[in-house]
Length: 120
Image 1: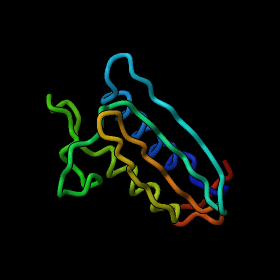
Image 2: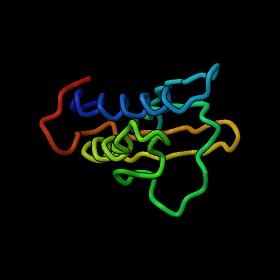
Image 3: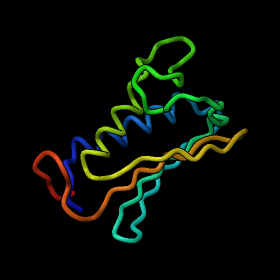
Image 4: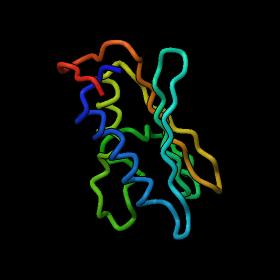
């Protein structure tokens, strides 16, 4: 896969940081990587209890998922989306109410878009 390693790492790191922040004590965070249909799938699954329904886009900067204590800036998901889109990919959320969320990054195996790609 051709990708900018720092840019892709920033997307995954932001998802993992959110997962560790919002997962309830005693819960788990799982990172998975799969390859299917000429796409690399990177999943971060958490046990945050699920995301409450909202009419707003979860990937907008300074969004509602920002911590109640306001310690975060609310930029992690926005940064992750921009990094993934720079690679010609997309990012999705699967909400599992009462349990958690699965964030999935999908990136095509072909050439990266944007900065000069490096091989991961």
